[in-house]
Amino acid sequence: MPSMTSYEHGAPCWTDLATSEPARAKSFYSMLFGWTYVDNDMGNGQFYSMAQLNGVDAGAIYGQGAEEIEQGIPARWSTYINVDDVDAAAAKVVPAGGTLMMEPFDVMGVGRMALVFDPTGAVVALWQFKQDFGARVVNEPGAMTWHELMTRDTDVAADFYERLLGWHSHSEDMGGFDYTVFHLGEEYPAGGMVEMDDSYAGVRPHWMVYFSVSDCDATVALAVANAGKVVVPPTDIPPGRFAILSDPQGATFAVMTVNEE
Image (cartoon, rainbow, N blue to C red; front, side, top):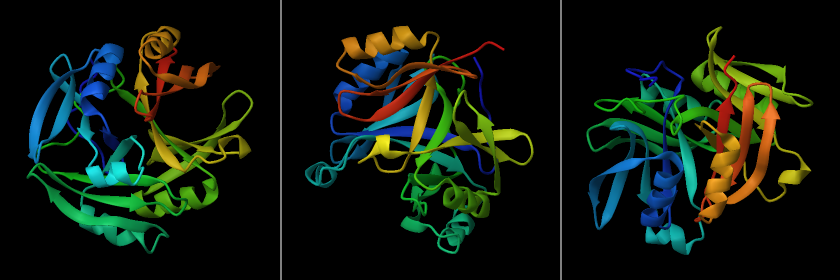
């Protein structure tokens, strides 16, 4: 099992799901990925449920507040990016063209975070760990394996994340379309980026979380059999075979079987 003990500055480090029905969501993802949960009481009847693979943290699920649900804010997976100093990183957001949704704040003594709108409208979290650095397992079936920005302006987004996090980007051919890859330094891939065309009408820019699975097609069939929906059917690309799904509460996510080579 690929285990993590730390993350570099600028590396995606965590993901969690905000959902209108956490109990149902936990059941769905347990069935899909084999997750078990450790429930942390946040008060007022709310829990932050750590999703685990073989006792190791892989992500989390929590319930949306009543106000969010009443406003029709959809269920969503979020991407967290590790930073050495969240206050210093947050100070770069506005000069780089973004918006601070939430100023840096402490999270139950385990870390400090801020929420950011990038200039294209996608939300991303910045995380500075104190006791909890993020996912302990990645690139294993049932664990996060990739993070991808879906946006309508790749040039503006690339400039923002370079100024905010020091990322560099380049384009790759993904079998008929250009795909942007973000890098930390010269080698380490931080994530990807896709420019949304007219087929994404009505879809807000967002970060998509990919989870590794051993069999993409079997996972899609299992999701559909348990009230999930197919957004993009299983599709082959150079790195492997992927699909985009939505869970019973409407949160979208991707699954991918990576080629062995």
